[in-house]
Image (spheres, rainbow, N blue to C red):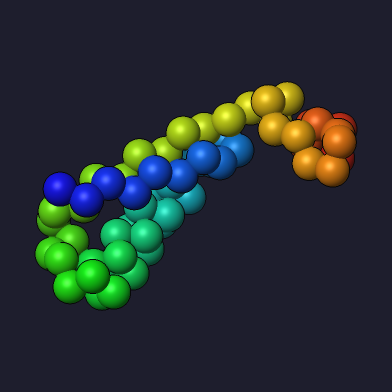
Length: 61
């Protein structure tokens, strides 16, 4: 089974559902593998654990 993994900041349940749906649909379309075969893993990361341009994301936002 193909696995899609994404590291991202915190999302609400509705956004996670949309992300899983869209990633699965596009990957299935491109690879011609049935959508039912895909597993999507979402690794949510706190903004204090993400650095961009030498600053914590929590400082930027």
